[in-house]
Length: 82
Image: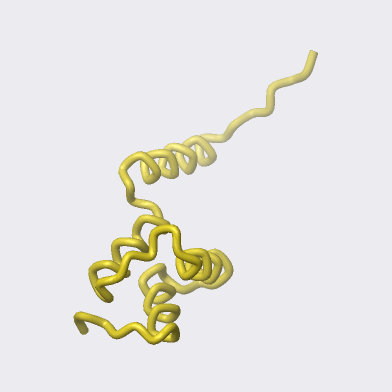
């Protein structure tokens, strides 16, 4: 019989927050889609730009909004708002 790994309170809290974010729609993936739509007027859902944005977000300390701005501006999109 295998022993069950102990789960710390911190791990439970982190898992709970992650699940809540997924269910509520407040995760970086969905935030990137909303930012692109609001600031640039483009839908990036299912687009390779979204994959690039998420890759940058996962490998840097930049906030998701900065990642969206960086990739969409470099792709030639203009911001609708400042």
